[in-house]
Each structure stands twice: as structure tokens, then as C-alpha cells.
View 1 (spheres, rainbow, N blue to C red):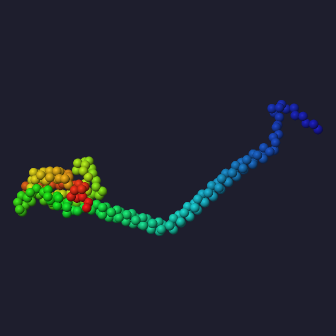
View 2 (view 1 turned 180 degrees about the horizontal axis):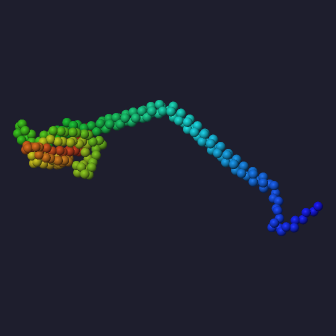
View 3 (view 1 turned 90 degrees about the horizontal axis):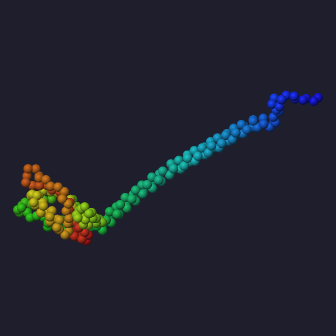
Length: 206
């Protein structure tokens, strides 16, 4: 028997090939498989990384005592180097303090009488400056090797001014005037000075 379809072409049933049905089912399954595979690989990577981190942490914990000992040795080495450096500076920058003090005493103003000095030192702090240092704002830029902080009392501002001028004109010293004020109800004044010993002067290295 011969079947003839007399329907218009637009209304005719079209029989699609069977492989389209296979693709419609297989493609989502393929995508799902790829996603599952990627997820599995990601999980494995994370697991491996976490295992490596735990291994590294265990190794670090084992090394902590050795690292602590190394840090302690490094600190001791640094402290030793500082001590060696200080000893070297002391050795190279020795100061004959007796010469410094003797030179300073020679510049004191005359005594008021045999029992009363016109100026005294209540405090005298001395330090060596090594290597010698110069500052354009201190001691007129001269290089100093020693520095002394002096405080005490003086019979009057004129006596203090005379002492400061002696230090200013001295070959071996420079002076920075700090302050001066009356000592209570007495006729004395308290003062503070910073005196620098120049390189090659009384405070020079031997």
C-alpha cells in the first residue's frame, strides 16, 4: 500500500534522526562528569596542600629548639660585638681626665679669699667623644674629643661671665652657656655649663 501525505508542507510531521535524542541525554551527563572530575581534583589538591602544611608545621615544631638556640647565639654575638666595639673605642679614644681637669681649674676666676672660692663645681660629668665630632651649632664648629657638664654656684654674674670668657678664649676648650639663676635669698648664683675639650688640646688622645 502506498501512503501519500496530502497535508501542506508546514503541517507535515518531521521525523528527526535518533542521534539527537542520544546527544540530548549524553551532553548533560558529560557536563556533570566534567564538574564532578574538577571538584574531585580540587578536593584532592586541597587535601594534599593541607597535608603539606601539617608536615611543615611538624617540621617547624621540631626545629623550634634549634631556632631558639640560634637566636640566643646571635644575640650573644651581637652583645659581644658591641662590647668589643666599646672596648676598641675606649682603647683608641683614651682621655687623660687629670689633664682635662687641670686645664679647667687653671681658668677659674680668683678666689674671694683663702677660704671662699668665687666659683665651685657641685656637679661635673665627663664623657669621651670618640671619634671626635664637630657641630656647626656647638663650640663654633670645632671638633671636640671630650664633653663636660658642669653645674655649681658662683659669687655673682660677673664672676660667671669672666669664667665663660676664659673658656671661650682658651685654646683647648669651648663652652655652651646653659642657664644661671639666683640661689634662693643668698648672693650666690647657680649655673649650668657644657664645656668641650678640643682635639689636640688638653683632652687629646695620648
